[in-house]
Length: 179
Ligand SMILES: [Zn+2]
Ligand SMILES: [Zn+2]
Ligand SMILES: [Zn+2]
Image 1 (cartoon, rainbow, N blue to C red):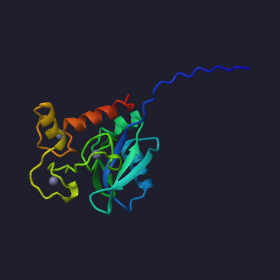
Image 2 (cartoon, protein in one colour):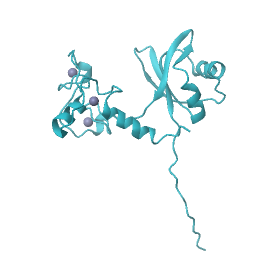
Image 3 (spheres, helix red, strand yellow):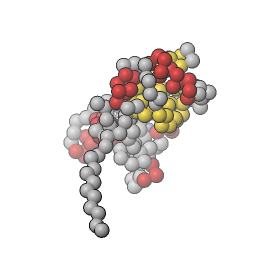
Image 4 (cartoon, rainbow, N blue to C red):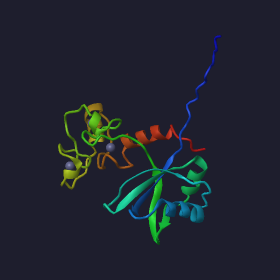
């Protein structure tokens, strides 16, 4: 017997994420879930996606997956009180930015460029080794040089004013369900 099954695939948009900055490493997840519930009126438990190092080894940034309704409630706040301290809260964007060449769309391990670029000053050294005071975005600088654009270059490659970063954020947002 031949069974035919037609699958109609609609690309399902994924939940957006929020980030809470610089939570002390000894804060348990249950504490944060309680704050969501009691202070921010979130009824569902949010899924912790991952954490990564914050401003010091004693601080971590927490990323939670947030369905559209919870996301829009949380976005009304830009601070969250944890252990009597206010912590900054915002939307978290997933994108790839290469630490070696500063291009978007791939990470260092997949980089095929041979020229090292600094994310701060566009010089040929690692961003973490930078000791220059002036700031130049290598992506905007190259665009001006190669494509004849006239973009401002006075920003870091990860700064929200960069049109290259902005277009990655736009692409990411198109894959998320905000409604
Ligand atoms: Zn690269
Ligand atoms: Zn530099
Ligand atoms: Zn730029």
